Image (cartoon, rainbow, N blue to C red):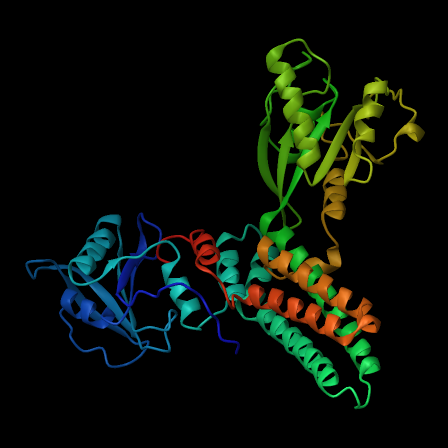
Length: 451
């Protein structure tokens, strides 16, 4: 495995945290990791010997005065075989907030310190138990909002992204080495044909990996779907129908919605953030005008726009102007009030169309299916890999560098070799090799305390 380098100064002290949610439950787990972990546990319980790795020992938790305050299970994880790679231990108390906090306080009094957010996983990364992509997989499992997102995170956690990134890195390294040999011994046999074929293979592998990580990011982060349109087109009614409950206020008065309203839902495994916006029109009302400005910003920033049109009213110049803003974007014209006589010339609508009656919830499944189709390639979702925005950017950077390397092959092996070196560096960043403190701080701060 590639060795990871970081400026992070690993603290060799012993840390402790409650790893389960506070509240009433069957059990609560206090996790301890560091060189003094087992000794900390010995100071808290009656039992003094924990010789076997991974074996639960029934014992009693003692307070400062030696009184029994709970019957607990204690387990030891030996160095090199624990989650963090360090000597570790856990105490499983009964699941009450007071007893869990008391156990943690006793651990701190007896040699441990409170862990920082994500510090256990950070130590696992520093000690080589996982790489950065697997750490992202851990976070993905914790934060998964759907079964599809959970499966994508689990595939990353078990090393699928890591192994493929390592394989591609090694293939690029072999190609780069061949080019450098050619530079050192120009009288030798040319390797350009072999290099060109190898580059095509690497590009194909990277394209597939980028596509899978893009699908995984959709599953992880979701998509922002903005509902826009003229006043009284039925935007809020559409939002309520998609959610299956009344979230936005609906009236016949134009301009009822003046602020951004957001709610989440899951569409076939994809997290969706619905954004209802103010009706688009010129207004002298300062508050409504600000709402319209926010609506236009949301239209430009959203991943998908549902432009709602009152089909009983027909199009006007403003509708055509706003829809022209969506040219080349992922957008859908939602022709609302299909229960009324239509006054639309649908041929003049430049977007893909779907007919609904938000009031009667007719056609809502068609909207959901269209959003799903716009959001992703269904064939990729089942193969998605959990990746952060940073990792996806690095993978795309690596792919771009290899493409440029292929195009530059006839210009000189030295240029191609340099571009392949850049591609390898991007892959190393995906795996966390050469990760700096700033990146690690940002990454592990997203974890909860105790993980």
